[in-house]
Length: 455
Image 1: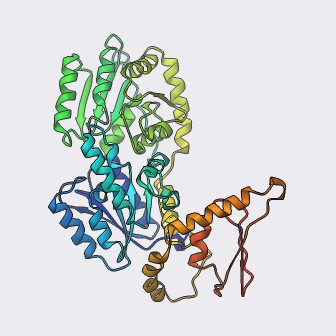
Image 2: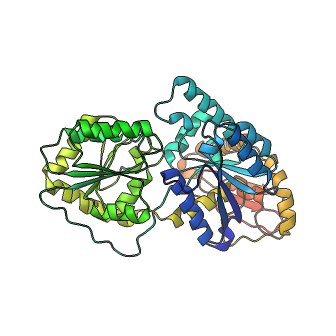
Image 3: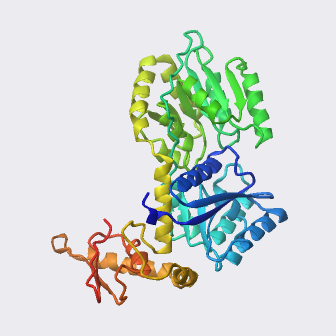
């Protein structure tokens, strides 16, 4: 990544231990690693207390952490930490440059009471109103934020990537008697719906197969006991193994040993394990819950309607009874594995998002004529002076003007700026990145500098 694209110091705040091995925590860790490789000083800090519905400890932890950061610091607040603390976000929003990172809205969690769902919706909606912009991990989540009054112009997507293996791993061959090895990776929770996979496999006992469920069994111990009881009740203890949380090395071994992957989740904000399994050339059976409808709509993946256990059973039966179908899916997955994004791609999208929100270019050829200290001093005032509503109104006006012309006489819109600087100003880029029609031409006074628009 060009040096001028790198956003400088970025602080990430997450609830609890940053080393937790769920998709959301791994997203932050891998993104921070990729940013640091590109020359950014990125750090992730965990906050004590109870989240996402915070207790007093959590409230104090976030307040103290933000209060201890220098004015103007760029801070990325994980949605799990931010959504329940709008008053803390508001308190520090003028002194710090705050961004939201939303994996999926808190109110979309499975199993909430209507009262809790409404509380999370209203609280997160308020919190999102005090950040400079929101980065989501999927387009699905970006679209969901329309219900939270977040303008489209204030949202950017940075989808996850995968860490590529340095060497090609040799896949294990299943013993003929044991049949294909099925792998599911997700912490045990009602939303991940491992109990539905167990129920579907219980109808396929006459076929040869074995299954490994990998993922933390301590986050929801009640549900973990429910899954174990379901396995025992179905008489599948010798065929379904729950291995708990595994480290990266152990997970790599499981991918190598597996013949195909199953994702039965009822809802995902993205579904990182889909990319990870595809990167290992594993064919996948996936639900279409939430963002999985888009994430898993790829070669080598077959979908079924989330929550439909009989549909999941049918998908499993097809591959277990017909090795040719499974082999065809494996070949498609192997080809698709070469197209899976890297974490460097995620870091690039993230940096471009921050540049977009700040109104500065993510462009290696831009240089400022002003002293960095002066720019740093005025940046907070610049942010406060910007109006998302006014920008959106300008965008609508420009779109209407452009679309009102017959296609054969479309011409670039011409806007002028009175700024005397040699290079485009922050105002230039702030509006430029938010204008969605091609052909925008800026006419500068003083230097007659023209730049074509995006598109």
